[in-house]
Image (cartoon, rainbow, N blue to C red; front, side):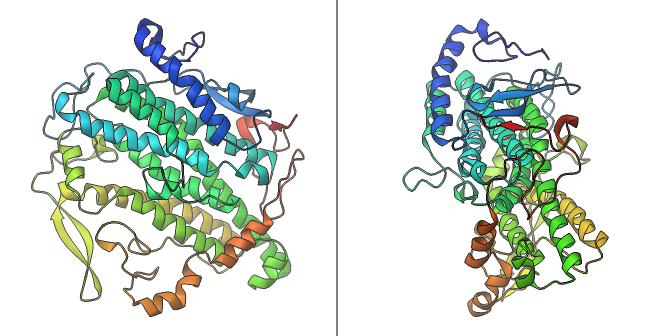
Length: 475
Ligand SMILES: [Fe+2]
Ligand SMILES: [Fe+2]
């Protein structure tokens, strides 16, 4: 089970060759996927040899192998964690019953929607990041970008496998549509708003992989609890790959900060104009990028009150983050949870049935988790002896979904009027000028072991290779 069959056209650990119909259907989808990769994947990079990890097993010890490959030759495949014997449903109305190995008819539409929504984010982020290779600050970073990209492609495969295997003709049509929607396309956009935003520069990329890939982590963790066992097993393995994406984000932002505080100490200044003249990214600009990416990402969890969220939970489709570690009844009827609302110009907390507030529960778990990295970034600033603290904004800041949508709230959580908002927005969110400045720093650095001026080198290389290793051969 843990070993992956690489002799099949599609690498897999699901005995694909024993199901000829499914194998044929996926082999039919494969060239369309590769065509999508050529058209919408990393720009101008098809011929590079990239030092990538490829999954060779789902055994937590030694699951990956590293080597130089051309990205179109990456072996995208279907990998599920091993089945747990006699796994039981552990939350919702069917708690204690056997987990489902097939899709129950009454949950078919909802499960398909969950899988399609998750699946849609995977190729979307590859599309958002497709031009970044042209301005990578080093070979090391270029390699990390491409690693994230090929694995998001693999996550699409993970969802497409479920659609093909369990959802018949509808599933096949959805799998095609996943290659037809495109990030930011006016006529046929990606499903979720944050996945139609641009990722125009590397600071945005690091923020995206820190904040938005972390949304992915929380969604996948909730799906890893699912009563639909193939979905649970698929998402568990996706999480193994996902950890590196968040590492790329956290260490990337950390290195930008390191370079900035070094320059601040060298020049003995916190003056933005002087720091920009020195070609580094001032801390207030980094704070504005955090504000933007954090607020756009927490919208992804959906409306604070949602009857769909209640249905998904009670029917066993989607659990809470770390459902198994919680000590309540895992049914949640009669439990309550606090959500925010604006009454008479003030944010107030309101108790609502917890089942309806499960999006908010997941969002709050996400917020707690994402603060951890911000604390670690602050330690870099502290260590440099600079009195500046990065924070995540209040969760009501710059929201676009649920009861807080469109309400003007400052980063520290005060409800304000339009005039006050307009006066301060350039201090709170990246301005056109900020974006133009960050954009002006971008330019490809290709030499082994060299780094762009605005970012510090990493402490360690990938897979214990040196920092100046040849991570990408440009050919
Ligand atoms: Fe992913
Ligand atoms: Fe990811």
